[in-house]
Length: 175
Image 1: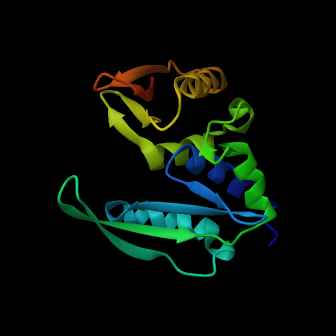
Image 2: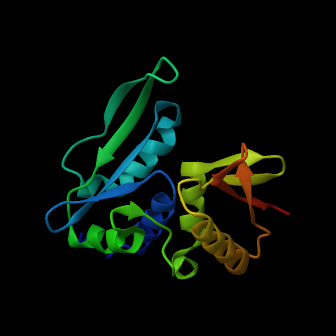
Image 3: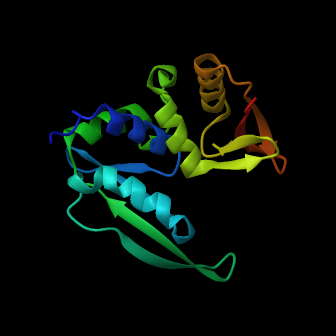
């Protein structure tokens, strides 16, 4: 199976790149990486099935000690092989090696992409869902909010988290 011949895989990539996924560009091509807490093992392995044909190794369980919390955390992670296909998404989601929300996110956003974004960085909040999009700028969050509102008819908005102006969440409510 050639990379890029699977539209579902492309929708999954968009969703996880808005969430916990990231890419590394090596000499010529990029590869996708994904890591998530071991408490979400079922989702992690479901996601890995999409990328298994493009990985040379099985997922690995990693333990990390966090000096800030004085705790050890376990995470699962996998890395794909480098490919021009992943480089295309690297070019969309990175500017000067910094992950961004692409200007054409409204064209890339699908129900599948949204589902994977929620699984990566969403959480139930009252009667709705919040998306932890705090790694993106205010203008990028506004771009995502506009895309969700226009594409799906949601009522999304951004809020500050703990008074920090650099931390924003997209919220939408199910009717």
